[in-house]
Image (cartoon, rainbow, N blue to C red; front, side, top):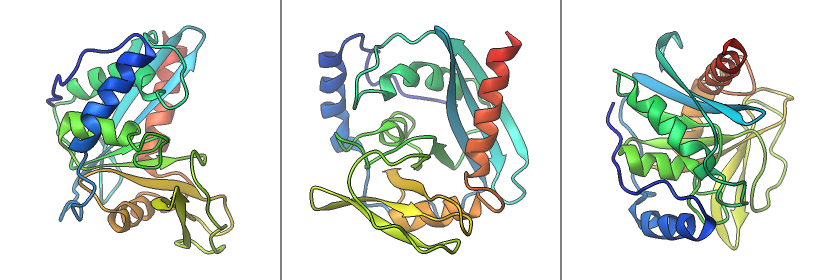
Length: 223
């Protein structure tokens, strides 16, 4: 699939912040989301010592069977800087996406989109680069405050930061910890949560994340 070259990969924080500021207005935060979703790509990165493995796994949105997958092993070219963590993972994730022959209808990132200190997390960035609808489903809370949602599957509460709703704490399974859903590009929050629940029929994390996480870890241990 195609991914636009909208900027070089930065090596220091000032360059990365300039890129975030330039691309932030390009994120479409108002579109209602894709009308039909047939294929969904899960994206995740695993780390071991000084290496990382990025995985892109495309699933059939109905059966949740794997349609295609791609991996890339690399070394982080950007330091760990709060608010700029996406720049450690983006180069390898983009390479993995470019190895896919299938262009998915939706990207599901293991991370955040609007629910980010700069309002431009990984899901926003990848959505802008690919032009595809994208959402972030984070395992952990990053910014803002929220009330604990109800205990039943599908219960949610708004995550607010600075007076702005930036995401939702969503209970994907009854009695388990919530995940944190935020929009990235061309998908609204209602759509993002509905798709997250659709992709998480049995476990806390959506199958997109589970499969990409497993593949990235297996890739590191196999090489």
